[in-house]
Length: 308
Length: 314
Image (cartoon, rainbow over all chains, first blue to last red):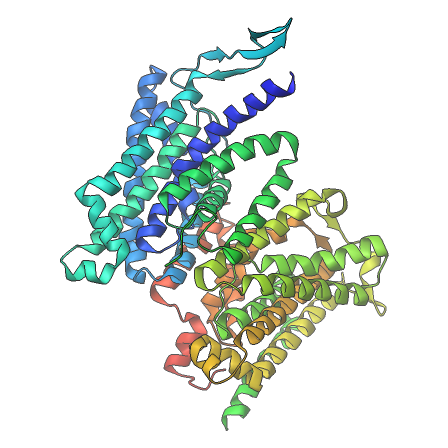
């Protein structure tokens, strides 16, 4: 393949990654923004979403599309419930202390991961995509004094990948509308701005926190469900997800939803393109160092405004 | 007995007890305790930063692995003998920690934890990237012939136990001495109230950097000794898990106690050892213990003892 079509293919793959990343990171960002705690077990909620999707689809069987739709609904709700329980049993009792929450969620990470290992096992298992038509894409070529369309071999995208991108756009738009237009969004923003004053005005801050934590878990679990037809479900898949979410959230500015989406696009697209040309390990090293240095020198993120 | 007398009796008594154990322990536990003593030295280093200075690092595996690889690569490629190799390992760990610390200490709290985590992850990936020399995940073995120190074969179980005890004893007493020095008092002052320490005229950043370097040097010494005593150097020791372990041991044993890291390491080692007979998901135990500790006993075992019985415990 020539360079042009190759770049386009990398961009498309990057866009799929960006869509999934935006969902994962928006959950982490939401939890940090409102509750001011960092959830280290975030990646495990992603893994749980993928594993639940496998369980649900293999339990229902039959038509893959129907089973997948069921997984798309049930898995995030179930993971959200797990997250709410974790918030009420653990994080609430730590008074949302940031440092102790990190230590406790590290513990939660191992509990979820190892319970999955004990029940689901160490195998990677696939889920069949509900639809997976291959769509060939055209490319423009300069030939014989004019522009011509042609279909280079290998330049294609599956309908499922387009669906992932569309789903991410819909969910994130919904999240944005919920935060800015709905009453629950208003309460969340009140708790984010000043939890004590919010409490004094009769807002049930603890309940809001539980909902936010559950919503964060559900968002990342949704990303997990969407990814299983592309990657397989495995009990260790949470580690990379956590790292990538961190990278996106920190570069986008901790707690800023808009910044998170921009950063997800940037990281997703550049990762798709970089890993075509460089070794993936080197790309990861650069990314982790970038996160560390951004936190050191620009804690408000590359796109964030002034920190408060 | 006055306070200092009690403190010396307790700590020297522990070392004497461990020395006596060398002659009574059955072979299996003899090997385990040797391993625990090296790991406890790592935890003692971690505790200087976390327990006494109040800085929670999630990236100490970087320094443990730096010591281990500094030692291992010196032997493998420079043909160094054990002592220079050990010193090389400590030097690599100290230098690396000075660089990482200078950057990471510009942040505080949660950001500090994430920055250290990211640096450690970058270190782990760097080891994988240079797999040609480091052998990556697979690691490499340090041959028995390369582990002979002044005619003493460190691969022999008895010598290994005593060498581990020597390291552990040095770390234990050094940290005890350090904490009772004025500089140790400043560390505690920073932990208790950084603003006030700053107001009293202490250059808080320099003290914190010193705590990072001292703590990392202990970790590097433990890492280098681990490689030397057990004859294996591998990237596993640079993973996040090895940054979490010292945190777990210190939390369990008691943050800000000299003896706590050892108690925590012994408990956790045997807890995991027992459970690995039942299931391969032994990290489950670590997770449950971490959650329970943060919820119910943030002081740990020795911390609770200090609160209830031994108020003098350093």
